[in-house]
Image (cartoon, rainbow, N blue to C red; front, side):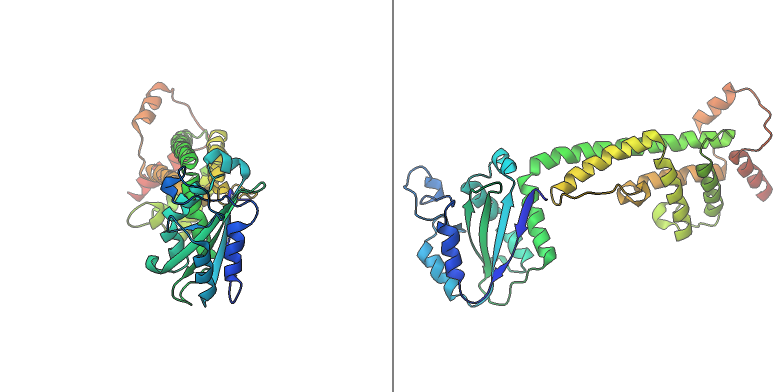
Length: 336
C-alpha cells in the first residue's frame, strides 16, 4: 500500500449538498474555528468544512453544490496513522494549508483552469488512516475531466510535499550510491581490459563479448556513444554490462542503489519488485559508455599510463595462446 492513498469517485445528479453536510458534520470531523488566523481567539463552529476562504458558511456551501448541475469529484486523501502523527497531518490546519498550496495543481490534473476551480474539504481524524474528504468541481459544467493519469498527478504532487524532507535525504543517498556504482563499474572495466591484454581474464563471457564489440565498432561511424550505436551493437554492450553486474563489488553497489530506489517508489506504491538487469536501467547509461570506451581503447590499441607502468614491472613470459589484446594488435597491423 502506498504511503498516501488517493481515491477520486464523483457525484452526478442529486445528493451533493447532503454529501457536503455529511463530511462537514459527521463524527470524527475536526471542527474549525472562525478565521484561521484567529485560531485561538474564537469559539469553534459546528462544522469542519474549509476551502479557499478562511470562513466557510455550511448552509451557503450546501446550497452552492445542490444548485450545481454538473459532476462533483469527491477526493478521499489519507495517510497512515504513524505518518500523519510524525509529520503533523493529524490536524485539520495542516491539511488546509496543503490543499490550498496545491489547489492549482489539483485543478490542472482535473483539466480545470485555476479561476474556474472550486473546492471544499473536511478532515476526519479516524482510525489507522486520518484523511480528508475534498469536493472539487469547475464552475463550468462539463469542463472537468479526471482520468487515471490525473489521479496519479494529484497523488504525486501531494506525496512530494508531505514527504519532502524524508525523500530528499533518500534521493541524496541514492545519488551517492549511483556515483559509487559508476566508479566501481569503470574501475572494473579498466581492470578487465588489463586482464584481456595480458590474456588472464577470468570472465570468458566478457572476453568474448568485448571481442565482438571491438569488431562491431569498426563499422560504426560518428560518435562511439551508446545512444548513437546501431541496435546490434547496443545488444552487445548490454551483454557486457549484464556480465559486469555479476561481479560481486558491482552487484553490491547496484543492490544498495536498488534498495534506495525501491524506498522512493514505495512512497507512491508499495509492492513486491524484482530487481531488473543493470543494462535495463536508463540511469546507468554512463556504465554502458564506459564499456564502449574500453572496447574502443582495445580496438585502437590504446595503452593507459597505468598499463605501461605494469608492463615495465613484469617479466616477459611466453604464452601459448594470444590474448584478446594481442589479437587486436595483430589485426590493426594487418589492416595498416
